[in-house]
Image 1 (cartoon, helix red, strand yellow):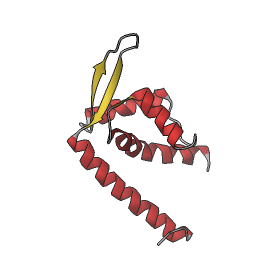
Image 2 (image 1 turned 120 degrees about the vertical axis):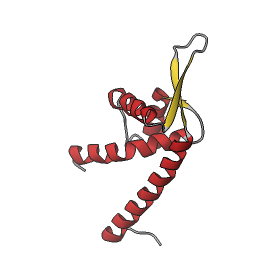
Image 3 (image 1 turned 30 degrees about the horizontal axis):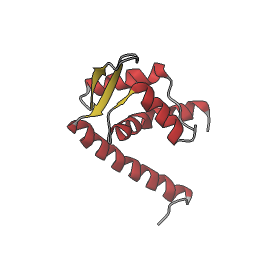
Length: 113
């Protein structure tokens, strides 16, 4: 996959990935980035320069809520959690993703019944 196309795929799925990771528990930005990399087997990586602006946009849209947490002997971190609107958006995006993958599968012959 070419670099430009790869970047477009990442851009289009980044919101879905972040919302999905926040579904079960609050997480801070660094943790989100590392989880995406680990769970994708290193195939997906988000640099801080692109991850944090996306988190801020999601927060401004009311899909996630962040709060600063200070723990002894650790730096202050902003933990994000999914809001009710974020849960609704995540459900919609998951459905759209399933439909997209199914459509591509039908075209490429990779669809599994």
